[in-house]
Length: 317
Image 1 (cartoon, rainbow, N blue to C red):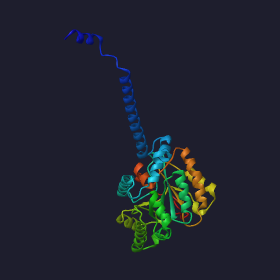
Image 2 (cartoon, rainbow, N blue to C red; image 1 turned 90 degrees about the vertical axis):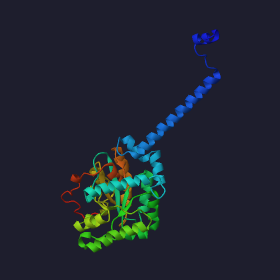
Image 3 (tube, one colour; image 1 turned 135 degrees about the horizontal axis):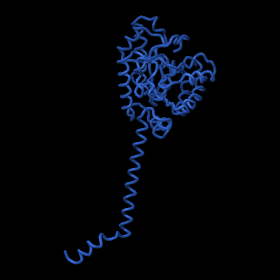
C-alpha cells in the first residue's frame, strides 16, 4: 500500500459531491413513492375483499373509491369480479350441502342483505337509481313473467352485476302444486332468467314463504338454495314510510336478510323507506351485502334457521 492509499484509508470515504447528493435524494424519493403506492394498493384491495371489520372499514369498502369502481365495473362477462362470483357460488354449495334453506346469515360481522321480491316492475328502475346513488348492493328475487316484460330493466341489473334470483314464474303457492308443476314453476323461471342473459340463479325464494319437502327435492336437483328472511319490512301492506323504516331498523341484527318488494304494485313507499334505512343502519356500523356475499362472509348456522312460531302469518313473500 503506497502513501496515497494509506491516507485515503485514514481519512475515510470522500464526501459526496452535490451532484451525487441530489441523485441519492431523487432515488430515495422514488423508492419511497413506490413503497407508498404498494401500501395503498394493498389497503384498497384488502378493504374490497374483507367482510366485516369496523364501521370505518365497512364504509371504505362500500362507499370508497374501490367500492365505487367495483360497482361501475359490475360482475358481468369480462369483469374483474368473476373470481368473486365463483367464491360466492362455492359458499352457496357449502350451505346447500348442510341445509336446504336459510333465513339469515351468521352473526360474525355486522352485515345485512336487502332483498326485493316480485319484480321487475314499474318502480324497479327508480329503486336502482337510489341503490346506485347510495352504493348499496342488493339481491332481487324475480318472477319469470316479469323478467320477460321488462327486458331493459333486467339488462341494467345484469350490467351492474346485481344478483337476479328465482321467485317462480308467476307466484303460486307451491305447497298446492304437484312435483311436476313445482318443477315447471322453478325451472321455468330459471330458464327465463338465463335467456335474458343473466347467470343461472342459484338462490330461490318460495312465494308466500310456502314450501314442502317436494320443493326442497326439486331445488336440490336444480342446485338452488331456498332463501327466506329474518326481518320482514311488511312493505307489501303499504303501512307508510315511517312504519316500514321502524319495522326494519328495530328488527335488524348481524346477518339479517330483509324482505322488501320492488314489484307487485306501487313501491314508492319502499323506495322512500330504503333512503332512510340505509344511513340509519350505516350509523350502527352495518355493511350492506348481497345474499351470496353474506353466505361467503358469514356462513349461516343450521341451528339458527328454524322458523319462529308465527313466522310469516301474514303470507309475505
